[in-house]
Image (cartoon, rainbow, N blue to C red; front, side, top):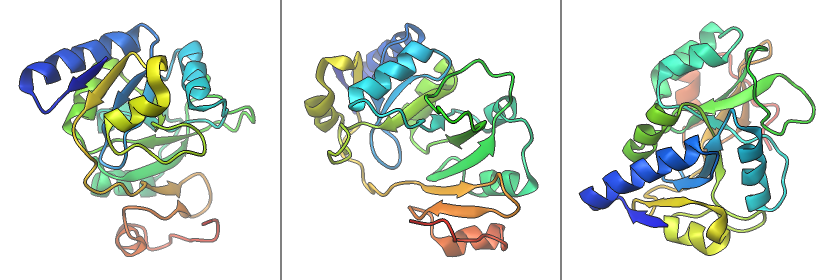
Length: 216
């Protein structure tokens, strides 16, 4: 069902429905500050697989979205100083960081390599944050079929994903549908993996040793 979160009453119903759906292992589509995302409980393996199937069968591990900076400490094994500085500067916002996750976490994000790392972001969108603060960490990928354009409205996502998703949260068209910037913080120096909404110059103001060798 699609809920128009631009209406206060519908917003409340939609957020409640999305939270219930995620806790039941179902899929939801929600707005972020980049593009719309399709999400599932990060700790429910069958829900994460359903997310992959809905997109068209990809087993690439989706990023994990969180609703609070403090949640990050519970997910990671160790957090480098550079990671903390970037989080302080750009969260909530369009920065995804790749860090080593805690080996005690009981999740399966579809990463068949067993790399032990996870991409994490705290989005700057009130609807997403309200949902995430109740559900906890969610595996979230762009709300589109593989090979199709990223959805910039919930209605556009519904046209692609249909009944595979329990609740669609519509908040209007994304004002700036640029992907998040991705920085890998698991190596010797912070490494730009994907250029995106946050310019490299701003990143370097925080982490001057940022390298770009893996971009592309």
